[in-house]
Image 1 (tube, rainbow, N blue to C red):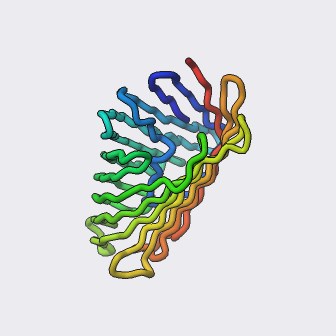
Image 2 (tube, rainbow, N blue to C red):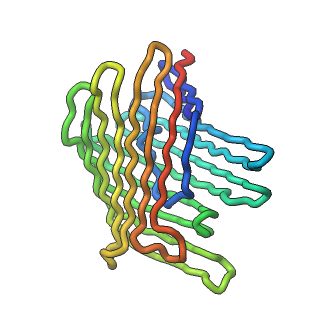
Image 3 (cartoon, rainbow, N blue to C red):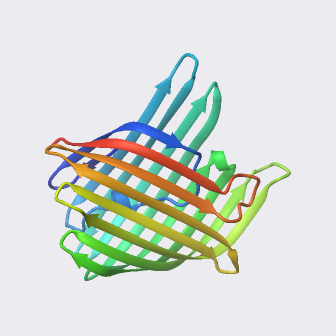
Length: 255
């Protein structure tokens, strides 16, 4: 769910249902992308689930974004936290922080970023990445657009710290991605993000992220459904290489 504050509105989204299977390392910042203006904006995403009785489950996640634009420069800080506890066992307690910079060149931009991350469900103690690239607008018609992006980044990953299976991984990766928004009608539209990250020294080691989100807009609220697919061709420890999640939600326009 989202609480988006800018010059015009605040949105609040209630999560209806989620099917979540762990998580992979690619995160999508596109859904929380703020318009390039002269204001400071703050975005909040929060969702949770409590079950007691035959099922003992506590699950919540929260995401925050603070952004500031100055002329053609856009600065963004994103903080995410996910927690899952089932039957007294902590399954997930994951943190992601990312600082991102974009410099606008017309409708195109260059960007750089720094990211820190841990994912307990993947037994990942840390992931530090830094890199940059270029984003190019291929098509635009009204509110509809299609962008392509290319870049490179360095990653430092540590798995199973202090265990006999400890794995320390250092890689350079190429990153290719595409982003699209298409309005089928005044009330019905889709956002789509696709990321492909490939090891520069081993082309069989790649990661894939796909997230389409479909919206239906009503008078004072938006309904949405999204599906997230994450795939790592060669996991570094004995875990599944595929994760999926499906979510239904509502966004209310408060003002």
